[in-house]
Length: 80
Image (spheres, rainbow, N blue to C red):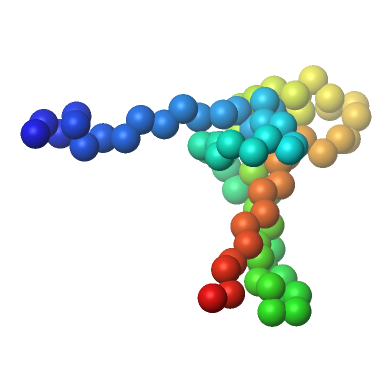
């Protein structure tokens, strides 16, 4: 087999194009701005704030309006 046969191909979704309630998995990329890992009643999780070029361009157009221009991803740990 060739090296190309082992490589996986990913289709990355821009963070600005992601939608809430979408049930299929996303492949995303971005720069981590902030991460928190609170512990709440035996349910550890992590919130990560990400930004990518699609959100950064939106931030440049909203300089006068200080809206949230990042995406928050939550990761939940399985306790078993």
